[in-house]
Image 1 (cartoon, rainbow, N blue to C red):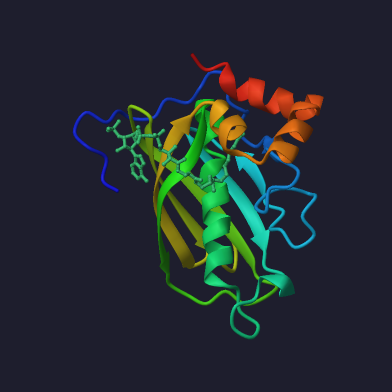
Image 2: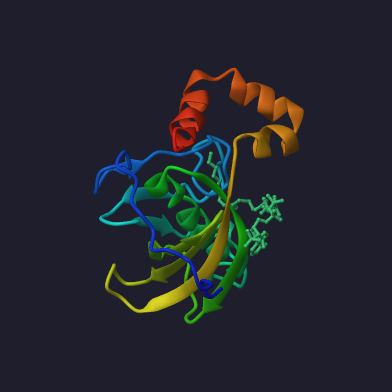
Length: 187
Ligand SMILES: CCCCCCCCCC(=O)SCCNC(=O)CCNC(=O)[C@H](O)C(C)(C)COP(=O)(O)OP(=O)(O)OC[C@H]1O[C@@H](n2cnc3c(N)ncnc32)[C@H](O)[C@@H]1OP(=O)(O)O
């Protein structure tokens, strides 16, 4: 999780979304951010200054692990999804290679988790990043945190590995193709 010697500081892409701008869902059926998943997290991420994004996630009944408390895997998903949105700030597509989570406080149902993620360093295709989830407000105590390494991939990663029915549906949807093209402009 520690950036190796030779890693460079992240550079915000000149065409990254402006600070405060909402970064739309990358896929309608994404469990993290898609509107088409009734029990999904429906995370709405915002671009921030630098190579940083924030998001809010309200824990619903469908997200319980223990009675009245969020499932740890769901909280990891919230961290993962927020970290994934950092690709928009670098204008690259990147998938999770490694995700290490710390659970510091239980998160009750109906709590709003305030997520904050940033890229720390880049080395080749590896993107070293970190995220926190706070409760009780954006300045509240940290309930969950994560360090991660994301790996840059090309759109072929999804076309070659995804199930054919969903890939065909995405390729037939001009809005989805627009999302992919926007991320592929990075040289
Ligand atoms: C349109 C926008 C889409 C955005 C989606 C965001 C959704 C939210 C985030 C997710 O949940 S993504 C879904 C969960 N992740 C995956 O499904 C990834 C599954 N793993 C893979 O597909 C491959 O293992 C992977 C693409 C990550 C790497 O395979 P490659 O063959 O392309 O890479 P390679 O093995 O050549 O390694 C390239 C570099 O990355 C490093 N690396 C690879 N896997 C790693 C790993 N797991 N942890 C740390 N480093 C890793 C590797 O050591 C190497 O470093 P060096 O360049 O320094 O040699």
